[in-house]
Length: 380
Image (cartoon, rainbow, N blue to C red; front, side, top):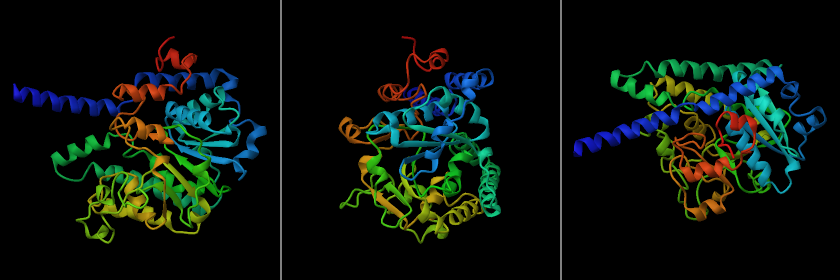
């Protein structure tokens, strides 16, 4: 009986892992319905944003929020929650960067569901008109390195290790090109000096003006790192992300608090004055050439190295991560500005924690015909 119980627990964990990787039928349905609507409904093809609001896209007096994502439903919740929580939503400008495959349904959603009075821009990677040959070469270097890493990652190690890596690589974020292209924010927004970067798996619960106004003290990026004064890491350390038994990374401090993507304020002008992007690309290459011994393939570890010494710690209240791993303390959640569903139990999946899933679904319109027709929300 003991063996059977242990076996069933392992099977349950494995099944939960598989369930966290798939695209739910409801989300797939929504993507197809929106693509179809784009083809047959001129309203779904209308400009996003409308021409009269286009000047806001480069106006520094507005609060600019970037999302780099291919998940229409997640982007819808992130934008809706941020606009709903804003003291003055008319000051918000959202820049949604997506890939060519997701551009049509993403455009269709925000054309039919504007976040007024906030403004939303949807732009596919294929629509960036980079005329600078150096910019094109830099972006292509990242794209090609991620593609090479994807191929090499599956070839390394023995059969058991390859099987383990196959399961790891099935995680959508491991080789998601969009995750790695965050390193090109200055190229995405050449006319902006500052931007707030949100992951798509977040719910914003407080006004973001305070985050926008953070003093970065000459640094490039503001992120939750350690609690002020105590030196206690709010989440993970460098040692949790990097393999410090490898000489190449031994010069860093393993106990140093690691920041993460999810909720960041970025000084693009300061970034442009550095070689952070080139450093990131170099470490991607080094990890591949080491046989992925420096870190398990992911987009954050090379960023920890590239931005080292250029990150300003911000108050922990701005970012509560890990809601895809655990249910947070209600008091901590109540005071947090942004809830981040990092971890396998994403809120659009059936394996999400029920109470957290309901919180996330609360930012979707339960009477929307697209959401009801695809079973994203229940019929009322």
